[in-house]
Figure 1 (tube, rainbow, N blue to C red):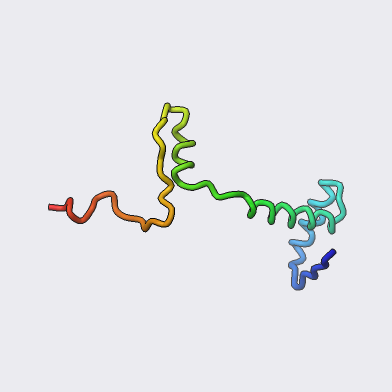
Figure 2: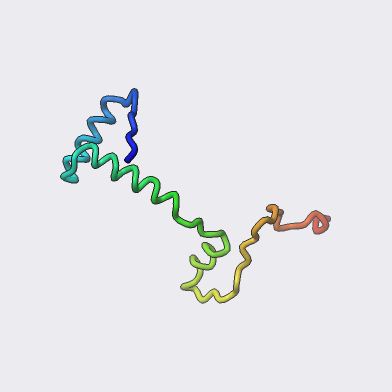
Length: 85
């Protein structure tokens, strides 16, 4: 198991960690391990692409059209330069 030393931690941060540990009935060391595990776990969540997020948001309204994910494409204006007068 690895060990980490955190230097220059503000006193108020340490105090808040201690209070949080007491609330969760853990040692301060175990509370910090819990916080770190959860912080890393959140990073491993897959990123939902824009098309999937839009489809999910409008699913209850009856949207059945597939929305492309636009992988690897550069953003572009809704109006092409040829559409302007």
